[in-house]
Image (cartoon, rainbow, N blue to C red):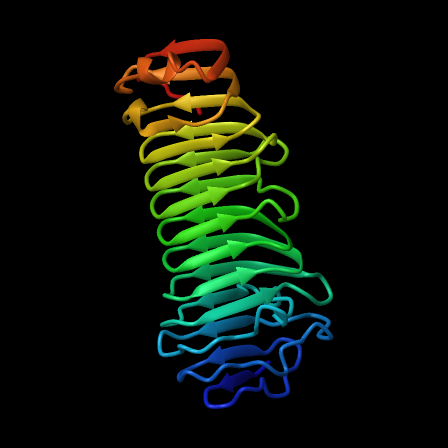
Amino acid sequence: MGNVIIDTTNTIPATSDNDSLYFTRGGVNVDTGLDLSALLTGLVAVHVSREWTGNIGTTSTSLKSDVDSGASPIFRYNAGGGACWFTPGGGSTTATLIRNVGRGTLTLNGTGTVTTLESGAGQTVIGGNITATTIRVAGGVVDLQGTSGTAPTTVEVTGGSYKTARGTAGGGSITIWGGAVIVEALTNTIVTLTMAGGSLFLTQSGTITTMNLVAGNAANVRVARPITITTLNIWGSVENASSFTDNPLLTITTTNWRIDTGRNF
């Protein structure tokens, strides 16, 4: 287990299983030595510091490695600028935790799985055939594209912006506490969508199985296309509820009006 430092060179030095990559400073664009998919157990960590402003990879060649070795593997992107293209690729094609808290753009592409994606700043694009199982957005912008792999199971938004062209997988859910969510999910199904704050823009979505309006202002939900909601639960503290339920673009099978005690969502 060692630390591999990248600062003034455009090449990633020789790297072994269980190493950690540190992109420390400077504006050099790293475009060679990016394919680390031959590693069997993968990396322990990738750390991109705030002093780093260069690009890592290109639109056609990504940094490629598993980041799932050790007790707490992490890819922490804290760049002061620039862009990074990354593919979880190796023995397991998995990155356990990716956290974007920088000022640059992090693009996930190729084929692989991100167990947990966290966004606190910057921009994160989930494309290719990437499956992000759990997505948490507290800041920044996350763009889940329609070309991505299996839809996420759990999405939690407390700030920033989350745009999705996918539904949710299995019994999956999207919960909005703050920030903004834009759903462009075509004909995919969102199993459970809960709004307890923030704003929601439904530009396209085939079916929402269960929608919970728990708190906040229903006027902050904008609907641009016809949508079917199988079950709509509305709590008494929601303002302007009728502005949502009376929308002619909605087909609602069952509406339940609930009191504010004993919430279950």
